[in-house]
Image (cartoon, rainbow, N blue to C red; front, side):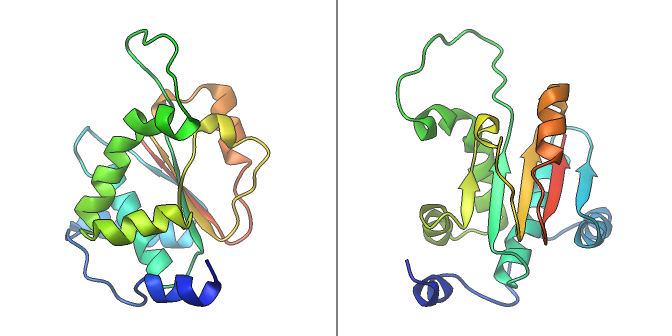
Length: 169
């Protein structure tokens, strides 16, 4: 897709999001905008991933970044054995919560799907982080408490120029 068509397919400027941030989330958002590495911690259901998705979409629509990269460790509590299919198909169960949060924040599923197709939103497995540098991006590491030490060190080294990394857990 050409740069002109890409620009026309995505809204720009101030966007009306489907959620309103709490005062605490607004403070966290300001901190995220000023620091390259950010840790959002809290109880389950406290809106950590929701905040990260809202910040990322806001920065993207305001043209502050060019891409949103999202990952989460693939930790399973049961043995599923060999899963057939492509990487995308295998990652699908772990990405359902991310897509759900994106839709809660910005209830325009067709635009979000288009952003995935054009890789403006890239859902990546940790196994495919190695060797990459994410520039001019927001990188969301969801459920970071499940990362191994080696995975944590590796993710820290992926952040490139003009990028922000948000660890949620």
